[in-house]
Length: 332
Ligand code: WQD
Image (cartoon, rainbow, N blue to C red; front, side, top):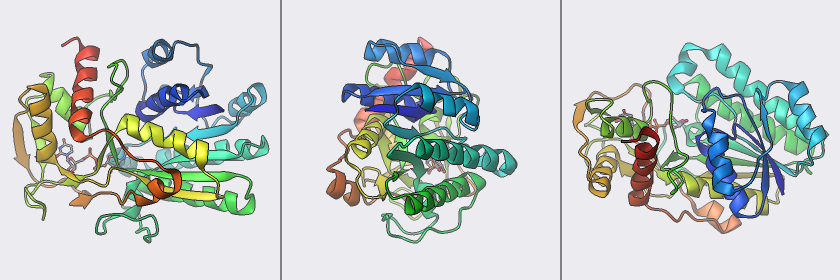
């Protein structure tokens, strides 16, 4: 299949492009470099040993996106392109609603007009809100606590409504848990700009000596060691879920959690990182971060039963691959 990948130079998008080629598919990438560096395309082409059609621009530009559908035979869409910083979304709600919702609307509308039958959307476990884990796809979604989360819930609804009206337009909503790690080549990975918000990029900065310690947000959660528990998933496992969804999804609307089903605490992630990589991560145990929940992990049964998809890589592999990428890209 020839797949349009929006946001294909970002962390999850770029790894998914590799998975597509590994499975014999091809990609057309559109990305506006808003959260990706220019070198990623070259690195992808080195990894897959082939040129990848690339369009620079924002997916809310309907003329630009329309031309992509006109100029390429597109069999499916993987729609990653979105802003994703929770805190920034609270400060700049208009920017988040405008970009993320227009992006979903523009790409879906044009995909439908061009008779594309498969559309996979990057959703998030954040749509479940603060309720007990494991999260099941059938649970009611609680109101989002920030505009970023609201754009994911609203985009899910928009896509469900489109598929309801046009059942030939098969929509798959993938609710990601916490992706970390990197491709084992170390060529591509996650490199956020500025001070990292998320746990693994922050650990990597500490390991590289760019920051003195990791702030551990909370030591009094009702968890085994008091720190927050999340379902970390290797980004290549997450990438492979997209390919499985493209190859097998059949119903008009398909909703799947993509996680391992296994929760790990912040302190467990740090321990695994230190042990696997022989690097010390100094800690500063501090107050809870506003908006965080204690525990979040997936019930991954549905995607296994319906698509035969299962994660393959454990936490040790995730922390090892993350460090391998960070060392290579920072020449440490
Ligand atoms: C993981 C754990 C923190 C940083 C967020 C979004 C979600 C998704 C992924 C988008 C928590 C703790 C973190 C640090 C810490 N969206 N932590 N010190 O909050 O589960 O999910 O990112 O891209 O929608 O909400 O991920 O990596 O920020 O935090 O102790 O410096 O690590 O409190 O327990 P989170 P995270």
